[in-house]
Length: 408
Image (tube, rainbow, N blue to C red; front, side, top):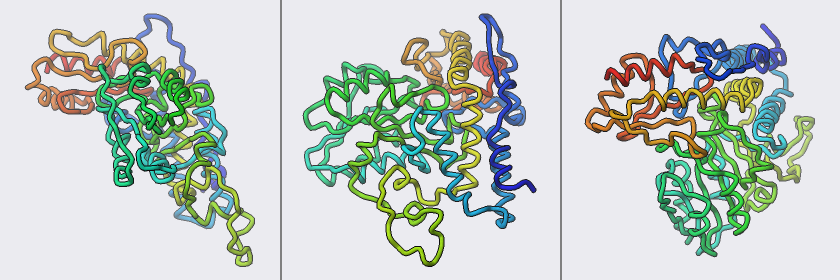
């Protein structure tokens, strides 16, 4: 059996040459170079990454390594309890262009949002602004604060998502936080992160960004775009296991939190694992202070690290270009007479989520069922069918979905 260290290195490497992807104009993308990094999907077409991203082979290998090591725990050194979370922090930091020591490891998108809801110094009369139509995780975390006199107010945009101008008009002197998804699950529309961040800075409002439907298929540099807080899960576009996620926040935001979790493993040094080390806190409050308890989560964090490294090796911008071409193919191939495109056809608000509605709404469920019966997995969201392709999909997958839509 491979050693723990060897397992980590094997899980974290991808063949860069196999991942290089250059598509000339007019190419059909029939066999994207990332296909071999994933399983066969049992012959089905998975167009539901917005719900669950599949584990790539390198991540599955990492999970198997973690299981094998847990079966023979003598091969897990004490250093692994620090090494595993550190590797993940470094990888996420590279992904979002942030220092590793500013990354907080969580188990969901909601984890980071709850750190803010429970930790920011709230006063009666403070206001949190959220968007009507946003995903529940972005909203419900704040609602218990109403019991402390904090107002949770809904911004109702004219379109699917608010513009920077609408946001600025909605702000009041009481607004402390604006919390929004980057890409909206129910419409596929994306906000303009840079312009929203600029408005929030100008009005001294904390901008909390839920990146779960974008991180992994869109690049972000938090030093440039400058949200105050970025939260995300790891199980969608990052193609990691369920119950993973992270939070990044500006150091001054972290310093403003009014509570400090006391998980023993983050309060001692790895050299102090002895019975004479004492019980003193290390006296330092940083991002690791707020990591989810149990950071040596080998079974989840090792495969998540491997998945993100695969994406980084592929190049997030290259993945985004590939996904954009898939969305182009799907959008242009729709029969306008039979289907209404709910998500944007083009422009800055378009994302990798494509939502369509049959013009005959009574057929929505039967068309969705026909997709599944013909091996195409999408999502049903009310009267809308949502497609969300990612790097493992090809133009053939899109054509297969279009053929089912045409014949359903």
